[in-house]
Length: 437
Image 1: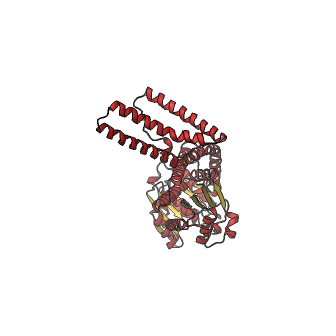
Image 2: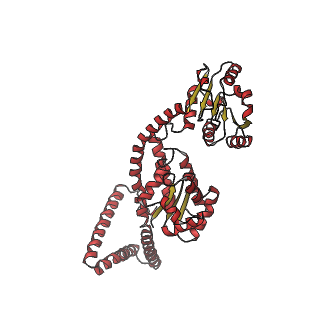
Image 3: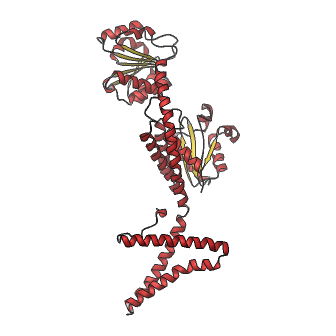
């Protein structure tokens, strides 16, 4: 059955469209159940994030899947069609590997998408939608993503303002776990910064905002504290790291406020980052001896260098993906023959059981063991050969050539196995073929 990947992402669709077709994490399980109930797929998994929604389906009617998706999203296919992409077989595998490795992300090489893909696979497995084909695809994608992350520089360089802030702070302080962090503002950029700094497990994190409710919401996410912006002048000296990004049209952290904080700190250094435009921190603060102040322009240089480094690693990552696509496709192709192999083995087992039963009866009647064994071997040989020989006799000239070639290949493989067994008596001749695994 063919493998299909249907979706849209930040490259193909604006946020307004992505919001309409997205499927929340808590709803994915139920969505998979309804998708399978419509009879359009054998296996399915849904990856839905803020930047993409992708449906991985096997044995599917693409038209039926699209119809279900649009009905689920409350959107017409005509509305969504300009933003959708569809990949089949090899292209679908390539897309899955690129997504897992972070090559298709808004932030090149970011690791969060790998965790989101693992969650998507786990949810599909929990509701019984993940069969052997998609399970193998996801496991293969995870392994390739790990290989890319460990053998290339795709994840080593800083490529976001938030990450750059942490990177520069680590240059000033030996251990961020010993520092106190003040986050001024509670918007999207500050949420990213909060997440990055929380990962370093600082001693204390506080969110200051004009609206205490928004500050509390962000503080709860990172396990920190919240306070009103008006309280900041009295407590600024308590913080080693200050990150600010508000929508204020005028600076909210002035030279005098910082001078008083430094005096209370007895001139212990302060690391400050101003991500706001217009600026939140008066430029004159940069001239103070014990302050390390960085602006958006300063961080942009760090990010640009990091992006260049990651772009250089993309070439190596794409080479790894190109080499690994074939591994999954080869496995998938071999799976097609598994039912034939299993049927062949079952037929052989039935012949063996029948002849063994007959031989045991003859032995019980007192016949010579040597004669019984010889007869059993002869009968098994004749019965095994009867099918191929009959097929050869019935075949036309073209089919007979193909059968002869197949028989020569089987004989060559059998001769090779027999030689290996003669060299190593411990080899188990009854072992199942690899294709059946």
